[in-house]
Amino acid sequence: MEAPDLSRIMIRRTKLADVPELIRLIFALADYEKLPRPDDAAIERLVRDGFGAKPLFESYIAFFDGHAVGYAIVFHTYSSFLAQPTLYLEDIFVHPDYRKQKIGLALFLAMTNLARKRNCGRMDWTVLHWNTMAIDFYKQLGASHLDEWQLFRLTHDDLEKLPDLPLNF
Image 1 (tube, rainbow, N blue to C red):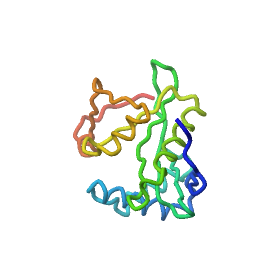
Image 2: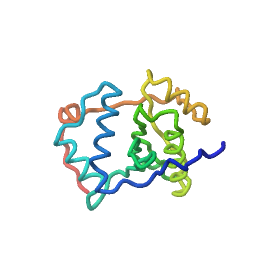
Image 3: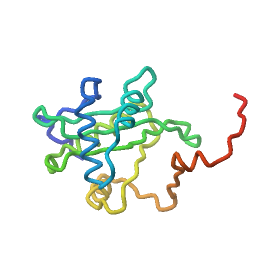
Image 4: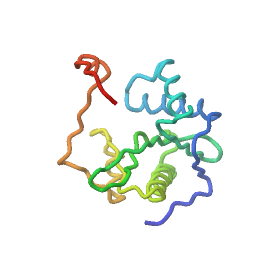
């Protein structure tokens, strides 16, 4: 695959000073997916968890002609079978007003480069079933849809309902 023309696109790790732009883009993703926007407490946790002493995730911002127009959030998981880290792509988003400019491709390829640089055995992510534009994009890049794996989730409320066992570690 040919690398996109990056003359108008810049991608870099998000800085603390970029947080207002990151939050604006997260709000735009929530609006796009018809989900509630993060509240003030969630934003506070996001800043702490992404930019505190021990970050739990990394974020990257895509700029087009100097304007913040997209972002990606990643973190590592670990494959015991591969004995290598996995780069998990939690979010990748380009504002709808800036699509068709190869920004999403550049942002995605920046994350694949990061995975290669860190010797990851793979890169994983999920896609909403209705987001056919994203599904088609990933398939064009050679990504596989894993039919044999099913995503499960316990919400915070679900976790609170489970027994609290003493742990000795």
